[in-house]
Structure formats: structure tokens, C-alpha cells
Image (cartoon, rainbow, N blue to C red; front, top):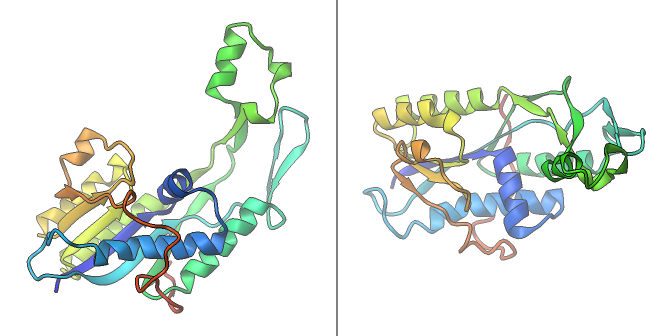
Length: 243
């Protein structure tokens, strides 16, 4: 029975899950993520490896802690957006990470957020309106701005190190990566050279051709997955954070 490790780019998963299944509580999103990852194990109906059914080695989740201790001026009214424990976004993500850390066979691998350059900037549509003379900057409201500059550090490196460790030590026979970033190509090459089967789940997102050429196959299950259905793919308590 082939061992399979599932690696999840947290920021990517959150964006795609919100788009596919809507915004939900942190606890429910954690439950959903584990069910989705385990769905790859029970859904293995194409027998991608010799040895029949898959066996889950572990789910590795890569992300950063919620941003804390930073304020940014809101251009539309001059007030401050404060990132901290009182912020609903902080609370939802903290709940999500706490719940996920309790799941069986889940390892959290945490990076950091480089927060020095965080700021609001006009959206692309707002800038077009300004350039075309339809509106002035002073006429822009809350919906015309977006936060930029929240750069994750250390996450890609941790993914690369884990892929190398899992592959070169032949800890697993197969890796499934839930992501779509070409930055992972060097790690994918390391795994495949070691003889590990490497699959990609882009959750409906367009896959860059360069990345597509590097993986063994695409296994996108987001359309057949039922996010609100619980079952034996749901993990229960017990795991932790791996730094």
C-alpha cells in the first residue's frame, strides 16, 4: 500500500476554498481542509501507483500566523485598520490554525509575514476610473482599495525542505501538492528524481504550462468534493505544530 503525503499551500487553499465553497468559520474551514486532503486518499480510483489503495502518511499545512501588532491608514477616511486579536480576520485565522493543529496526522509548518510594507492601494478598476477621468482619488471608497505587501517568508523554503526529506529518504511513495506556484518546480524535480510520484491539485485554478510539464499528473478533486458532508475522511484530535 503506497504511502502518500499531502502538502497544502495554506494561502492558496484559503483563496480557492473561499471561491469554491464560500467563507465559513475557522473551525469549519479546518474540518473541510482535512476532509478534502483525505478525499485524495479515499478517491484513489485510478490506481496511480502499484499497490492498490493509498495510505496517508501525513498532511503538511504551510502558512503564517495571523498578523498582529500592525496598523495601516485607511485612505478613504484617514482612520486606522488594526491587525490584532480584536480583528475578526485575526480571530478567524487563529481559530482555524488552533483547530487544524489538533487534527490527526496534520503537521503545521509556519513561516512569518514581512509586515513592514503593508499598505492600501487602489484596485485595478479604481485606477482605471481615475485615469479615464470618471472619478477622482477623493471619490474612492472602502471597496476601491485592497491590502498589499503581506509577503510570506519561509513558507516556500519549508515546502522545499519537506519535499526533499520525504523523497530522498523514500519516506513516501507519492506526494500530492495542493498549490499552483512555479516556485515549487525545483522541489518537484528533486522528488521525481528520487522516484517519488508527484501529483498536483490546483483546485480549479489555471496551471502554468511550465509547472504542468514537471508533475506526473493533475489530480483536481474540488468539483466532486462535497464540503458539507462529513464522514470517515474526517480526522479527529491529536497532532501539532512542527516548526
